[in-house]
Amino acid sequence: MNILFWVLQIALAFLYLSGGAYKVFKFDALANHMRALPRGGWRALGVLEIVGAVLLIVPAAAPIAAAVLALETLGLAALYARYSLKLAATNPMVWAAVMGLLAAVVAYGRYAQA
Image 1 (cartoon, rainbow, N blue to C red):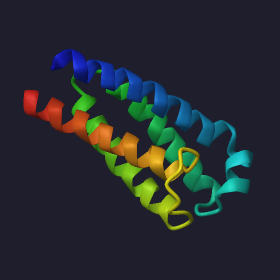
Image 2 (image 1 turned 90 degrees about the horizontal axis):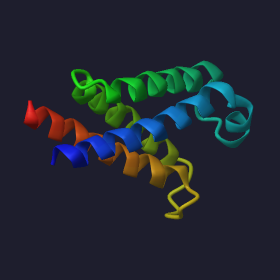
Image 3 (image 1 turned 180 degrees about the horizontal axis):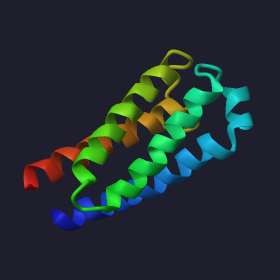
Image 4 (image 1 turned 30 degrees about the vertical axis):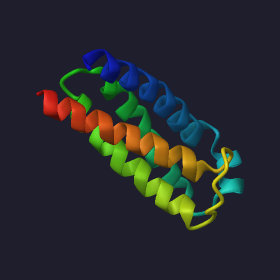
């Protein structure tokens, strides 16, 4: 089970790192697509995701980082749901919900192991 959690943590770390970098550095493309949050809000979420991705790899901080990322991502999925409920692979709500649930599984699993 420990190996499964490490695989999930590393995969989530890469996904959150790329998503956070997109929110911080490629903001103009995101702002044209989704106007739900102001510029500072998107950048703050991006920084939170980058820091959380790094902390997912640190064994002592992984349960807390996964829990925070799960809450952030499920909240973001709810925000995306306000704009589109179409269940397609291109909808960011679907990806955010899946990543949030996987982060919640990692948080629960790491907390239960501790």
